[in-house]
Image (cartoon, rainbow, N blue to C red; front, side):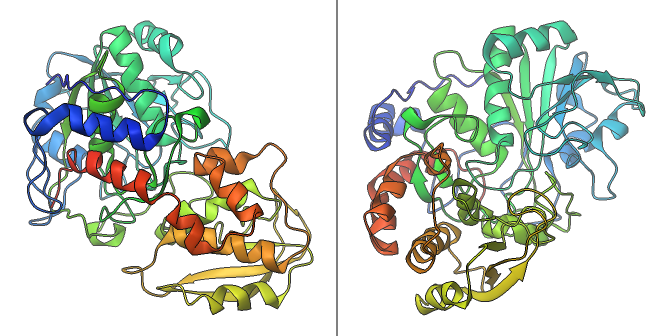
Length: 433
């Protein structure tokens, strides 16, 4: 199925671009969703929220790989591409005569997951299967299209577990691979997996195109509230409309938008070294903002993104954060010594984030509140010199407002119009109730 919706977002404000896209598409072209979260259908599958849970791969294999028949297939995946009995899909597909798997493409951290943040495994032959593994990390456009062409595949299948945040790079691997597949004339199939923090709502600031990087290529919210197939449809319809991928999606069954990861019954395989549990994903879209500061975001501990701190911080930060009475979360005074990354080998003080009610917890508001209170209570607070915080938030406004003394509600309120416009566009691509 080739999706050819027009409506490419141009540079400028996220509000204007997204609103213009929604208005130009109109109800017939947009095929708006029915009800609050009911999306229109594309590709295979039924709506979520009923029946036994199955991933996109489960449904693809149960159908005998029918949509891949007669094609040379390459898979973009990493260690999260597993079945419910923790067999990797590449190891399942390789000996199966019903599908001709001829190549694997590895993202950041690599196909088998041997690389740390900012690394990849390079080009090699997989010892377990003998399949050639090609490196996609930091490749895009024609360079990545040339990799796909050199591999000799006809169809590229994407199956990676996302974490639900704009700056988690696998969704931009998806975007880059879709764009490159179109350039190379390859079919592109996306297999769905749950958004581990549910798909109930989009939260946070929307990226300003001027701040686009690999931690945020295009204009989506910081916590997008979508699955990878929904994002693929949005990318094709909004951002790749001039040259859309020949896209087919395979949806999950038995998943609904209100489900967190544990509802799936799937084993959690860390999608990257510092995403050890679903609890990490729950806070990540907010507390990852501390990568843009001189505080530790908990890398080098057993609770990355839940532990935050620096030398010289004491109990006053936790007290100030708790005084805000944020919904669904409490903060414990905590001390820890990272084994790598910031403050390696030093004991630092800070907070541990304890989510007490995930149904009402807002990770992005929480992240902003922690930035505001950290700056208020610790004289040593500083942004990273490269203004990495602007890349993470997708704008300079969060940093400049906090520097000017804005409180949490003022910072959060500043993105409300952009977020409303994104939610309007997002709604058209939702696939599950």
